[in-house]
Amino acid sequence: MRLLLVEDHVALADELCAGLQQLGYAVDWLTDGRDAAYQGVVESYDLIILDLGLPGLPGLQVLAQWRAAAITTPVLILTARSAWSERIDGLKAGADDYLTKPFHQEELYLRVQALLRRSHGFANQSHLNAAGLRLDESQQSVYSQGQEIELTGAEFRLLRYFMLHAGQVLSKSHLAEHLYDGETERDSNVLEVHVNHLRRKLGRTVIETRRGQGYRFAGCDLAP
Image (cartoon, rainbow, N blue to C red; front, top):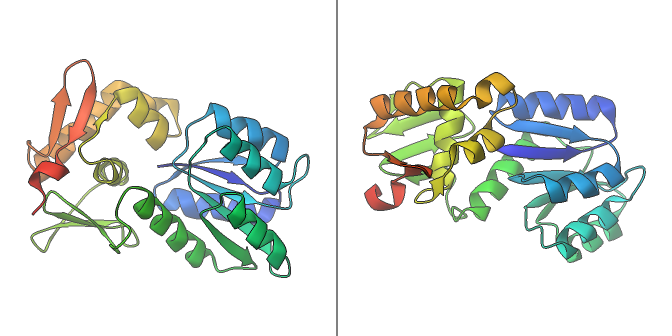
């Protein structure tokens, strides 16, 4: 999952980037509201974490520009504890959730996971469930019939994205853009290797290849 973090407090942003990357997210970081307004339109993100007190352009104006441009990406806003009016204005402007500073980083991570599940139709689930699999994001573990399946970090990130987009045909370029930071990881051959490893561990029918289109996770067909 590819996230955009817009936060001008460098120490906090460094900590959040490190924590989110450890949880398997690809993270882009910006500090200026003007850059964020542009980046949110030209790049595709799965979720955006937006501080409201930004240089260049206030966060509320950034959010308003995104929504005016029909950008529907879930947005989690960060506000100062005393700025209750900003929280209300942010929700009115189209934010999906908010978190007041200072906050515990674990709460932010849980809110990110919940927003991503909600935006993909898993609002009432604490875990992802599809194709007989249960994926626990907090523990970064996957279970089939109660038995844990060992996955590498790259395999876990790929499976999580497939499960959130069950039934959709996803091109290799789309998967690479939303999953990986480095150019080596974005290579289509590397992606094919990860898909083949998942098939070996989960069963070959779980992930279909659509010739000339990409891959499709068949969770909708196989879910109990």
